[in-house]
Length: 277
Image 1: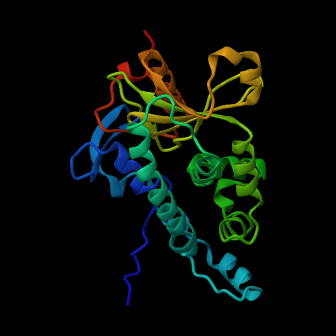
Image 2: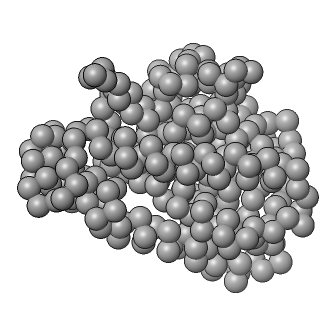
């Protein structure tokens, strides 16, 4: 019999992803900075970017879903079936992709197939964090203490079990309409990440999204309006070398400002990582 706490730790930031920011050679630890109290601690990756039973569904939602579904589910089905499958797919794609990007030059072109895979990965990562969950609750006017059948059955069961893929499909569709650039960090300052790793830059009606893949590689997405207004400044669907530390600091500061509380990095956090010079 499997232990009841087998799926106790449920990660909203995937462990394979956090290993890209590991602080030790065995890729088991990461530096964690807590924004609310300013503390820094080197922690096991399995213990960060997670909450106990984060995806676990309430029994009333399970009972309601199982009444009309041929496939019966239990409370940990999102973690075991959906998130597990997504994380395996993401890991299988991103590990060789990162290796290839880091050995490429500025002529490396991002293929449509790669953009499709990355869009799927980004969509799920964005939708799975506590910050996005609370945004959905707020949008639907559901109090935090009422996170029960209405939220869980509609958003988690229906969407994440492929019964209704509208949220994910809409996110992927939006991402694919944007211009993509792969930033390769050539400075001695690393990209950092957080408990909400896909961040959005403030803008005047133009969308900008940034997603660090490791300390040296970051995906940047720009609304096509930006290229229309700055056509000579953006070469899309290619690798771009970043040699300005302030660009790195800008991306890092977005992580700091938009995280819920935790910054993750392979080195101990320092204000120099986010403060413009």
